[in-house]
Amino acid sequence: MRLNIRPIFLFITLSLLVNSAHSWAMESAPPEKPTENTEQTKSTSSTAPKSTEADTNTETEASTASTKADHPSKVMINAPIDAFEQQQQDIKHYLAQEKITPLLVGSNRYLTVISEHTTAINKGVMVLIPDWQQSIATPNALNQLRNNMPQHGWTTITLHPPRKPQSYPSQALTAQERNTENIKTLTNYEKKFAEVMQAVITKAKNYPGVIIVVAEGNHSAVLLDIYQQALVAEPSALVMLSSYMPTLPENDKIAQQLALTNYPILDLYLQRDHRLVIANAKMRKNSAKRAMKIYYRQRQLSNQVTGYYPKNSLTNAIINWLSAIGW
Image (cartoon, rainbow, N blue to C red; front, side, top):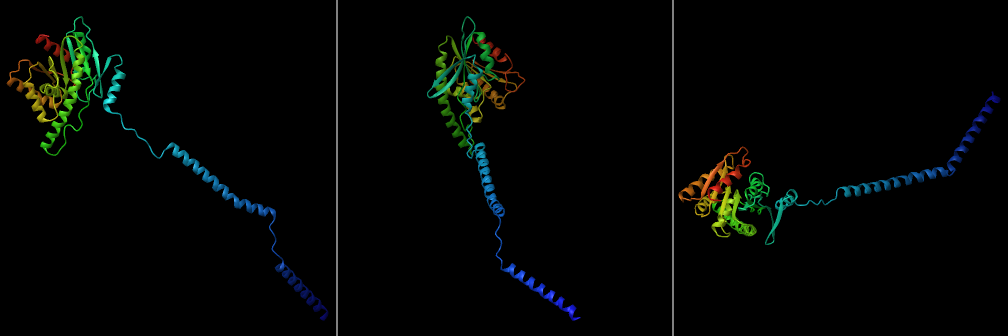
């Protein structure tokens, strides 16, 4: 038994000694240095995020620059062109075949279209004045006369009138304030319009014959006041087309001034017209009757489209009236 136990004891003792020595060696040994591949991997991994970040910044700056180029921070919006200037450009563009003559009044420039008579004898000149905010070729009335009257021996001068006065009619709270502001606004406008009309009449005197003024809407009422104040010489005759003013005091003033005139007046309006035109036509007629005005005639014309004079009806009405008074 002794012979069998002793070798086993020795074997166990030797095994323990060997394992202890190996463990001591492992603990005392220095840590292994990383290989070159490991160092390159670490360096690559450490620098990779930096390059990606730089590329991202570059792409962001490029996209921002392109966005600024496409959408600038300050967008310049030009103001719309003035309506009066726009109408003048349209006249020059669409009426290129007409005889357009500029008219300089002070520092302002106006346009006139002259259509000379096509007959052997010139009976006179018709000065055609459109309503506020209307152009030379307004189709509801004056365009008919501009095309037809030269065939009857009349030279026509159509004016592109000044723009409507701003802030008229007044929107003040009290009636007295509104009336005061309206009078002031119209007074300033009439002075300006009288200068334009004086220049047009001077141009009309270059042609032989009488001078007849055909005015539409508000301008026909304004002209009555201008003639009453003697700002412009009275015409040989006046044709009023659908005449009215937007305020009651001004319409009363029209009726009173019409009764005091000495020149012939033809007052035309339509069956289907502006409500203020129809409402004030009767007032003007009654005023003329009370004053026993001989050369005043009022006539209503039938129409289908509101505010538009039927084809040739306006021309025939004026020609027949001129023949009745001797022209």
